[in-house]
Amino acid sequence: MKEKIFIEGGRRLSGSIPISGAKNSCLTLMPLSLLSESELTLKNVPILSDVETMKALLESLGCVVSYQKSNNILNLRMSDKPLFLAGYEIVKKMRASILVLGPLLARFGEAVVALPGGCAIGARPVNLHLMALEALGASFSIENGYVKGKVATSLKGCKIKFPFESVGATANTIMAAVLAKGTTELVNVAREPEIIDLCTCLKSMGCKIEGDGERIIVIEGVNSLKGTIHNVVMDRIELGTYMIAGAISDGDIKLTGGNVALLEKFIEKLHEIGIEIKQAEDYLRVRRISNAPISSTNIDTEPFPGFPTDLQAQMMALLSIADGVSKIEEKIFENRFMHVPELIRMGANIEIKGRKAIISGVDKLKGAPVKATDLRASVSLVLAGLAAEGQTEIDKVHHIDRGYEDIIQKLKSCGAAIKRV
Ligand code: EPZ
Image (cartoon, rainbow, N blue to C red):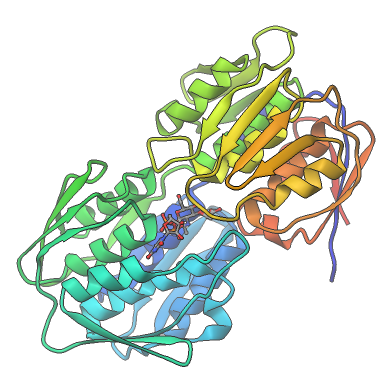
């Protein structure tokens, strides 16, 4: 059924919004259940369709998963009769499915995972995942859209240098190396908070990992992992998205559970353009410093701790009503400007030159029917709709359900005129 979101713009948001657990951490933590015969319990789990998809994938591999939505808890326990095929039907829905490859190879020595294929924002190959897992001793063949992995004897620790930071390749390799024989040294790893969250959980399962969050991670392989109870780190991308909702609506909102430490570069940029962020005991407060217009700025998206690519579309919506010309260079993905034509339909003045977008601020955006293409692009249209004059109608809203728990209710509770039909 084609659901749409309608927003009547121009309301100032005020009130407080609770921040949920991180989608991208949860999707990386869930495959840990494949590494152990004991139960893995995850708390502070967001209620998202991507979590449902990962649950279905793990169940297809023989994992028993219970998703208690009433208290945001996931219980996962791998059966001792594993299956090794991650089928295309599920994998094509979510690229994070590739994250079962490392754990399956480490624990069972074999895996058949459908190649995820590209997605809206780019080709998103998995060559770094395969390179690193091969270095640990796996061998792969690619046959009719599936990657088939095998481990002859057992994975052996070694030194692996990544040509550039990849969150998924770092996660997959760590999840394999924890059961490899001997020491693994990973160089030029991703330093995202979600990688640190993964390592924190693995340490509580008995793994020996040093250096998570730094450029070099050293892992001592162990023979088996025990179960654990782990709280998923809060979602810094959801946090950043609602910070922009407060800014773009000229509002004053509190984000409970928010922590500035995970968004330093992003917050630095918000300060630069005139948004005040105050960290209190257990919430962040966001409002404009004065009723001066937002000023322009230049942004390059980079691996953590740089400006997050997952907040690029949201920031562009805000800068489209800034005073002056801003430049955004998307340096992570090759095609992450799908929100631009839709923002232009709402009156934004944006020009794309390769991986650069030049945003000339306009006084006002105008509500319009627009369409969502990927998760972060669709939420940038919601943000633009909050500020636009008149009604904005957003089509294909299933993209939003992938990454934003309860977004309609969270925005409504702060006074937004938003509904889903
Ligand atoms: C993770 O994707 C996130 N997804 C993405 O969030 C996020 O945008 C991305 O990291 C960057 O921060 C999850 O955590 C589930 P990468 P991932 O490997 O791991 C290239 C969202 O909106 N690359 O760090 O796939 C790749 O094409 C999603 O929540 C290779 O070339 O990202 C990209 O250009 C979108 N070969 C760059 O590296 C590889 O083997 C960074 O990708 C792997 C990646």
